[in-house]
Image (cartoon, rainbow, N blue to C red; front, side, top):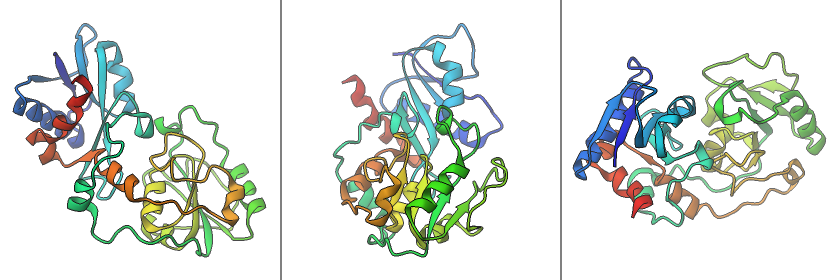
Amino acid sequence: MKITCYIQNPRAKHHVTAAETFCAGLKRHGLKGEISRIKEDHKSDLVLAWGMKQARNVRGNCKKDFVLAERAYFENRYEWISLGYNGLNNRGEYYNQNSPNDRWKKHFDDGRLQPWNPKGQYILLTLQIKGDNSIRNFPVDYQKLVNDIKKATDLPVLVKDHPVRSGTWGNIVADGAFNGSIKEAVDGAAATVTINSNSGVDSVVAGTPVVNFDAGSMVWDLAMKDLTQLSNPPLPDRTQWAADLAYAQWLPKEIAAGDAWDHLKQRYE
């Protein structure tokens, strides 16, 4: 099997880390992965790419599959790396259904998973980056969404902008803006409404119900799909979800040690 780990931006530390650690992990399994910039005439059975933009750029170089490296889901998202086949977030394949809870217990079972608490003071609407790959094909009208939420509940609607690229959606008329951290925002909310943002994961961990509108969300199976449910949100068991999601993200040292490939290689077994 020919495997290439692409680095689109060699100045981006996370791009380099993903490529170098993935190749090191392959070596632990007797496989060779090469690190390369994108070349049109370069064909591999499997490629690693950081983010969907790069994955689209190298898809023509890929004979079979691509492994998408991305920011992880449980905090600290900038320390962990998500690895899955052929899609972004919940559209990827992580081979993590019905996972054991060992990774959750080892890395994340530190009291962060709070009991469900739908008794907050407001509905939180979290904005995503305009043009981002996660909502690339989704029609977004946040003002209409605010108006629809207000028809479904008497609670005030607070908008939380994206922490990296704020203001891209212009002026959205709501009951206020939340300028604190995402943890503070979801802790005080009765529910979080989002298209498919990772704020849904933060919210579920905090015990705050979530409304999602796109199946690309990593909490899609736990989320409400309709604003009318805000008056009586379902509170599903999160035990298996937490165990499964722990198998969708890896520390760089685990990737370099071959642990991630030991899990992902089952696609070819």
